[in-house]
Image 1 (cartoon, rainbow, N blue to C red):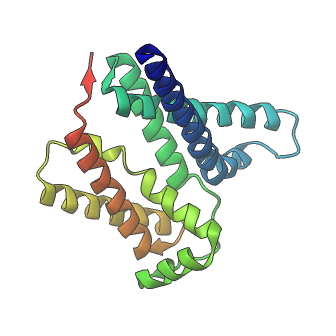
Image 2 (image 1 turned 60 degrees about the horizontal axis):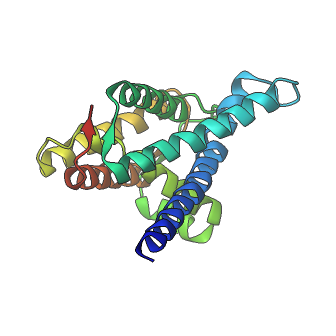
Length: 199
């Protein structure tokens, strides 16, 4: 009876992991990679569909590995290096390889972004993803003191927004800066508590 209960718990846990991985992986693909792929490959071309499918599968598998890493708290050092490089490549692509905007716009009032988030479901998802995508950076600053992490996250966030507006790859948005800082702070708190062993 005990073995059967443990088996059911394991099945439920694995099912939740898979469902979460599919949902988050798809959202990352939809909001980040679809835009990036269309920059390099024509959407009407024959190669677009297999690359899009491969990218979607990669997003889902990547999220699954990260969720598994957080739960089991152990990872092979080579796999960790591969995941880290892939993460930073994805992050840089999402931030700086998106399609150009036509003018440099500065949105200095964070309430504008907050109102958009609550009034539009797509903007709400985009805001949540903006926060989630910065959580892994918390791992790399976990040895800092909390106030140092806040200063680092603020400097990094402002630098990202400034580079985006200078390259005309996005708007300078103070609400995004807040979301990035929250994401990094969440990651910092998560990885402070979850000690991940790299073997």
